[in-house]
Length: 197
Ligand code: 5GP
Image 1 (cartoon, rainbow, N blue to C red):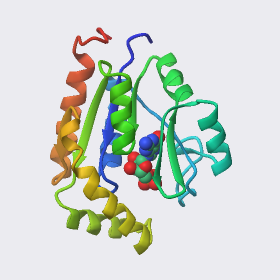
Image 2: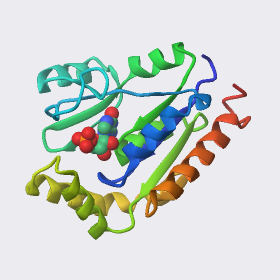
Image 3: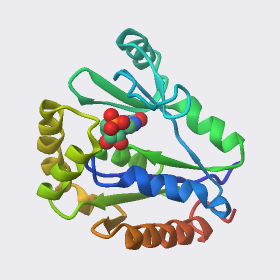
Image 4: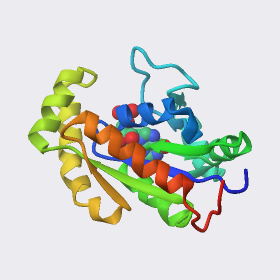
């Protein structure tokens, strides 16, 4: 569709943005489809190729950087590359849907800069760094070293919150889900530069 919009959710790892994005995807009337990122990190237990991510090895990933296949890409953690393929956004728009992203803070801001009028950039703020650490430990998807890497990055990421269109506090999940729904729904139904759906 010509008037497809972009909804970006960015936040430090463990803030709950993935839960929020999954909730929004279930609301059919929003007409959203998830932007599947490419990554060079190893697949976690439950993840599915082509559903959670397109898993590439580092060489494949770098090839795609060279051929300018990415809308944005980032070495989010050392040797762990993540990026949004241009073909992914085109695929979703061709499907007649709006695109929703679950990406890191720099990637989110880059998309906002590329499509300022079509993009709603949302920052999800966790209650505190201590709480973030507790959540990451509970999740048990990363070892202690990786958790510490993520925490160190989180402090810098929190400082970027004012650059986003909206900041949603996630201290109480139900409230954060409702606020996210209302914010996204208003944006998608507004007559901004991108025009009416
Ligand atoms: P995880 O390894 O937990 O799946 O993701 C690590 C971080 O990379 C998260 O903050 C996630 O949002 C971010 N990320 C996932 N996909 C992309 C992408 O396409 N671009 C960028 N810049 N970050 C991404």
